[in-house]
Length: 155
Image 1 (tube, one colour):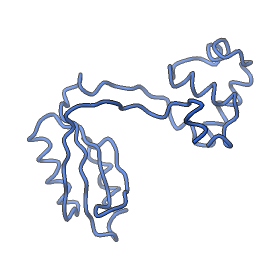
Image 2: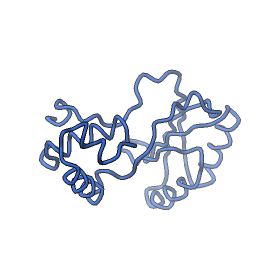
Image 3: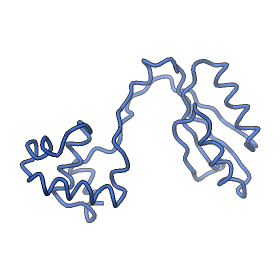
């Protein structure tokens, strides 16, 4: 990753991680990098897909959806792409990942209660899941994106 990003891009990403609402002027003031350079670098990062979108980090525990779970899904390998597309339509699903091991996919879900979770699992089976294993989150210790530190970039 360090070969793809220069020092200026790393500084910009660090600032945007702290506050994605910063203007180019504010980014320039915070980093000491000229505003024109900030603009050019941000556009480059967007075009390369490194910056995909500007978003917020919501504390899920404060929302009405009180149950967070990860569900391992076993699917016929020939149906993974179709099922993956179908999973995108389920509003409780916040993440979908193809994985190695006995299961093909893992999804992160947010449900309002145990009945909502049970209904979601039934939907998964209707979509083609042969087997599911549900893991309910009891406590969250860390739920952050990538932090651009020197240690991370040296990996």
